[in-house]
Amino acid sequence: MNLSLSLSLSLSLSLALAIGDNDAFSSFIIIKNNSFLNTNRTAVDLFHFHNFFFFFFFFFFFFFFFFFFFFFFCVPEAIVPVLYWLLTELGREKGREMRSRSLRDGMEFRMETRRGGGRSSSLSLSLSLSLSLPLSLSINKYRSHRFLFLSLSHPLTPLSLSHSLSLSLQSYKLKIYFYHIFISSFSNQKSSLSLSLSLSLYIYTCFISSFFSFSFSFSFFLSFFLSFSLSLSLLSLSEVIYISKRKKKRIEF
Image (tube, rainbow, N blue to C red; front, side):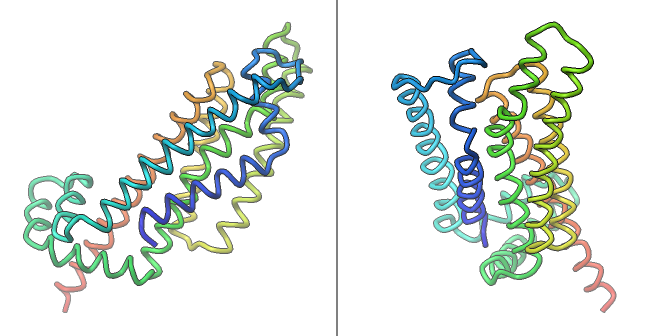
């Protein structure tokens, strides 16, 4: 599994989770009307809603998938380690070592990824699951946080706020339970650590965005870019650890 397949898997899983929720459509329409109590679905609202998802399909499936497909299948093998060295920021000394062995390490890494080894496949699965979380949480969080918005828009009482927070936490507990089953079935300890860190970041982002009443697009792109940067940093860190361990084994032998 390479990064393009991970992105396609993550987007399909995100849309399945978002569309599978019965209240996701109505929640977005309610937020768009700026009326939490009005649940009437008009033709104009549905038209704007479908336009939003057409833009979403065009942006992600065309731009991101085409970019990564072109990068991982059409770019020569020798350029991949150089770009990898620029992303990891190992410094001058580590950069000299990786530039001298860039072609060999890049071909080994690409061959392991194409074979679907345990290390590469677990990292790709971790990255794909990490990218699937922001969309499902940012869309479905309005179902649980609709009660929180209602309590914040009215005079605050401890009872209403505690009830809203309990409903929100119950929704997140169900999502955490689902992802825990999925992770324990298809992942190992390294990707579970990556996903646990990413999941804590998503929950923090969603709670902060709900309290400050950020828009749907802002909260989604904020969580998306934060999770993407975290996934890339963890991926680079694991690759650096793998290269350093392999170097120590070569020195020992």
